[in-house]
Length: 279
Figure 1: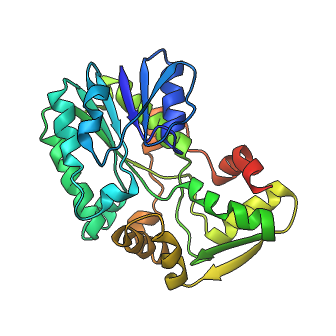
Figure 2: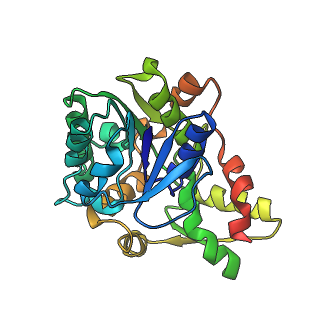
Figure 3: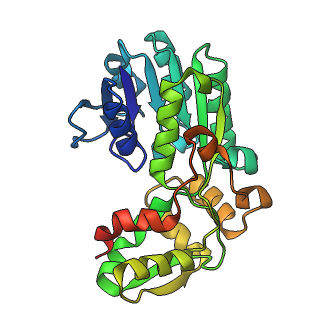
């Protein structure tokens, strides 16, 4: 049995689907009740309270670990989850980390994530780490304003990064959970091209067949919106990257193709699959 945390999110949902379709028994974990694929079992648990995971991990062979926003806060102790997994007999953990661990190692949340990666390496478990850059699905934050006003509001409109489709992250994670060849692997995941927020808005407009106006937010405006959902340190670290990506953050990684045998999906593909939420 494989346990997937964050199982109802943009990565966890397609990962749960992929594992179920591969014939695996899957326990899908989230904080709230939610629908999951037919062949998966859903359990409500809170990673901020690791002991709530103990009955979920009993009998599991592998764990996909995705941290919610509050587990990036300074007082959080996500390494306790790895210790609990080892004590429960889990043999393999795949951690969703961040590209910034390598590209921005001094960012406060990146230091914490590096420490979690190190705890996993030292746990005695089989492990793999996936480090995505920016998510294509971050564009879902624009859905309401596109529907109601025909507007995309975002900071740094002409600064691009190679955003990754969450389904590609999920498929790489599934390979790491199922294939021993990926044990000890660290995979940096990007999309196939650098794309700016303004270009993303244009892609949404093209898929809708109607105009979408772009409104450039200031950094302070963007931060005030972000900290409603994530800790301030994580907001600052993210804004540092998207305002001035360094050469490593602009590089197209070969790791999706290395693991999956195909190129990563472009942003247009993500838009086409999700265009209904913008209508």
